[in-house]
Image (cartoon, rainbow, N blue to C red; front, side):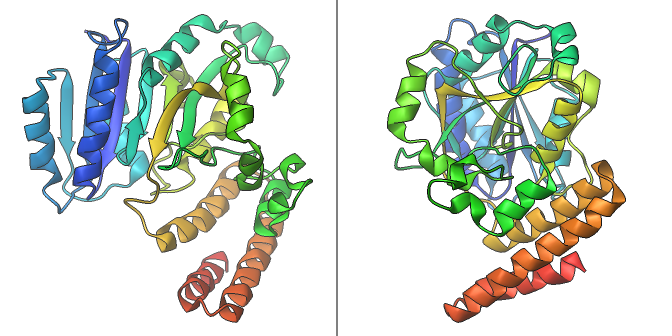
Length: 337
């Protein structure tokens, strides 16, 4: 029997955080007349060693939430492949990928689903008039991500391009005044300029979505029709960058991507990954995505940009005495070669 919403959480050695995330998710679902009897939950455990599986089973038994499936892997398959396992089983019309280190704020899930229902689905218009300012074929929608202190967390970025990567690698997106106007793959600089006051103004406007070229898989709701058209997350990406690659394919098929300012999810951040894995994963994903989607000549330029960016960081961290970070970027230089 199909559902309106399927929620997928991949867990890896985050037992306590996973339980807290599930608590917030189920509390949100049960306060929604739209979703409380029309939602299924998948938890995919990537071979955790912290008794996560037992804790998750006990949790669902305690809260008496019947529409769930626990998939237990015998090894860590990575973010993309683990999510794909559940996506292939999910029956929901809308699919929510949710990190295990998140807390869902009240009303977030219903707000996202209702937005999908209310926004016009105009493929003909979308295919003939692609525009970053017009949302007429919504395929991916993210809530606003918050830090634990309530401040805004960077979410998504500009379209993948050599210029966007260059701005990120050379810190140009962090420059005062002009940084927020430059395309950047991560848009950390631009996110700092989006204050809570400005966000509140957007929240006061009904369905005022914020268009993006890509959003993070931290909390990403997907129209199931999109999966049918573009396929699943790329299993060749173990972790980091799979969301960018997925959104790139979505944009190629004219789907719109946006952030909803009225739906909020708190994200602890980096709870199941180290700084080293995140940095190296980012460099590896850029190289893979360019090999897959961009002309060969651009890959040569990308390698130069990444090499220069890593070199600048090695020099900076050595000068500031941060040997650990300097060593990580030295490893990144080896990956680029």
